[in-house]
Amino acid sequence: MNKLLLGDNLEILKTFNADSVDLIYLDPPFFSNRNYEVIWGDAGEIRSFQDRWVGGIDHYIAWLKERVAEMHRVLKSTGSIFLHCDWHADAYIRVFILDKIFGANRLLNAIDWCYNVGGKSKKHFARKKDTLFWYSKGPEWTFNAKEIGVKRDTGSKSMGGKIGVDENGRPYQDKMVKKTGQIYRYFLDENKIPEDWWIDINSIQSGSKERIGYPTQKPEALLERIILCASNEGDTVLDPFLGGGTTVAVADRLKRNWIGIDQSVQAIKVSELRLQKQRDLFTTPFVV
Ligand SMILES: C[S@@+](CC[C@H](N)C(=O)[O-])C[C@H]1O[C@@H](n2cnc3c(N)ncnc32)[C@H](O)[C@@H]1O
Image 1: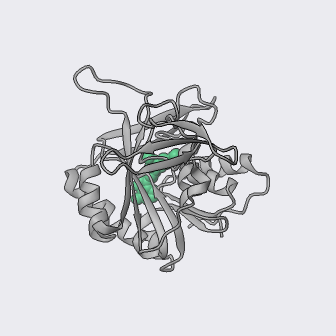
Image 2: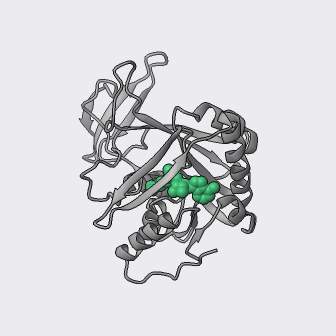
Image 3: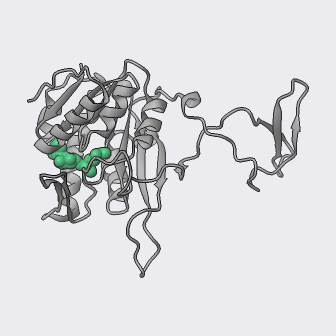
């Protein structure tokens, strides 16, 4: 079941059965008009990919749209998709691709992933967030709230309200809705579901232990939250823009089946090595 596939994801996705995947995460080129390059290791290997679009935004959107249409086809009716993008094209992607293919009513969240590393301009506010559009294919989807709970911030003013201990010894905080006077009780020994802005996961830094030298590598903690909340053990997770293999490495660790696609030989090689390091017993890659 687990596969690393080399080639253009459009052609490869066309060979997949419809309704066969539970969760898709994609981190495509962002329309940044840059080429990404990292020189890695003692041998000075160049790990790179291109993000330049001669035909402008229309060309980029058409290119991505036909791929997302295939992703929609291969998703199960209970499946969902996280599309990772940033300010360069997020508005276009939401309106011209995702709303068109999945339907605007299938948008579950437009998550802001906020970080603070990397360069900053002196001419405008620092652009330090990416967007994760989360859409379901149908009216039912997986959301494991308990798996991704985070501690309540009782110190914050917005929590407000009286703190106490109930008759069973459970610490709580009460919050009153001013308009209605209704009081809601939050138990402090229970985690809460994170909001749709994530500020507790930073991006990969130069000295970071998990850095494998693949340009624009995403942190494992980000994929962990996505995979834990939107899939179950034994489900199939697909990343059609695999890069350095973050999605498949995390999916493997979390006992999901996985499929990774990339058109770069380096990406497939780096991901394979990463998986091999993570566990000795590695399923033989099936390369198209
Ligand atoms: C932003 S990187 C992904 C980084 C990845 N999320 C990680 O954590 O390492 C995008 C990847 O998409 C790949 N790619 C671009 N166009 C593709 C296509 N048409 N088919 C398959 N892979 C493609 C590039 O080779 C690159 O590795």
